[in-house]
Each structure stands twice: as structure tokens, then as C-alpha cells.
Length: 242
Image (tube, rainbow, N blue to C red; front, side, top):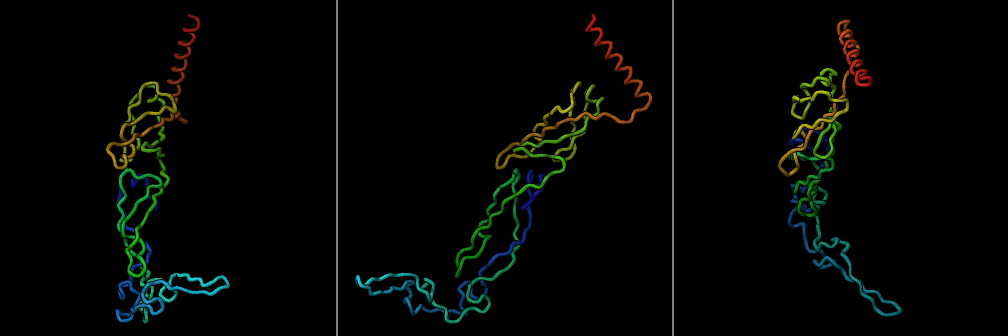
């Protein structure tokens, strides 16, 4: 089953429909039209096995094996159930409510007891196993219980510092940017990642900031940047030449 990153993080209930064999309601899984149609197998006398004797040049050999008439069950059905043709099973579709726990990850295997195939001749119901797969997320990449995201950062905020809005699994959150932050710097947001499976606590969100350079500037903005560049050049020359 494919689930989203948010469903894996916080858990979800899903209703699914599966095809499966169930016990025939008419014969209760016996395969017989009625109780009188079930009798002791005449070939094996109810033992489920028959003995065969063979004479050879070396003597007489006896072997035993499952009875062919009753297939080793010891019971013989004279008249089969019309609903299931004597199999004791009917094919149907079953709705099941599945609970996915918070913190589920790729390959998580969920077992639902008694939700599998019915056993033959009234045997117990088997189990259903569901393997989870994660859908690709448009914003986040998961690594264990941590998630990674890339966000654009205005170059003025990178230089001066400040706060920006960043996406999280629970909506927008404020992230503090230190002055002088360089492009591709990774900042950590504690406990904004995936909850631990069967445990307390959460992973982190790792935000990689990519400095965004504007491609359209007004005359005033260009003048300010030119002045800034000149001031920067003077500072560098002053350090070089004293």
C-alpha cells in the first residue's frame, strides 16, 4: 500500500477492500449439502490412509499413503454443497479498516490477524500482511526519522540575518537566519521531523538555504549595490595596503 509522508508521520486509518476466500455460509465450510451427506470413507474406514501390498521376486512389500477417495480426511462427501461445489469456500470481497501507526516507514509490515484466507474444510482464518511504501513528496525527502527541505533565502536576509517562513509537516514555521549565512548552509529545526515508531520523540527537519539573487533591480537598488560594492573594495584594499 502506498501512503503519503504525512500519513506515515502522524498515522492514519484507511478502509481497504480485498478479495479473499471465506467459509461457505451454507455448509459452514464442510463442503457437504447437509450433515447426512458426510460419511466415513469406505476405502480407508475413516483412517485417511490405505495400505497397499505388492508381491515381487524379493518378497511381499506393504506401503501406506493418503487415501485417494477422501484425500486423507477420513470423511467422504456423498452430496456436495451447491453454493461452493464442495470446496467449503466462497470467493468474496471484504472491507477492512487498517490502522497505520505514526512513524511508519518504507517496508513497514502490518499484520492483521484473522483477515486472510479461510482454511479448508472449516479451518481457521489466516492472517493478512500489508507492506507499506512511501509516495514521493514534492517538498521533503526523508532520511530515517529526519526530513530534508530546500528553501530560497533573500540575499539581504542572508547578509543581515532575520527570520523566514519555511514549510514543515504541520504547516509553516519561523526559522531564524544568522547574519552572514552562506548559500547551501543547513539549519536544523528540532523535533519537526517524523515521530519515532513505537517510541516517544521525533526526528528533526534539516533546512538547506539557497540564496536567491534578484534578476530585476530598480535604479535605486542598483545604486545602493554599487555603493556597497565600492565600500567593500575599499575595505579590502585598506587591508592589503594598510
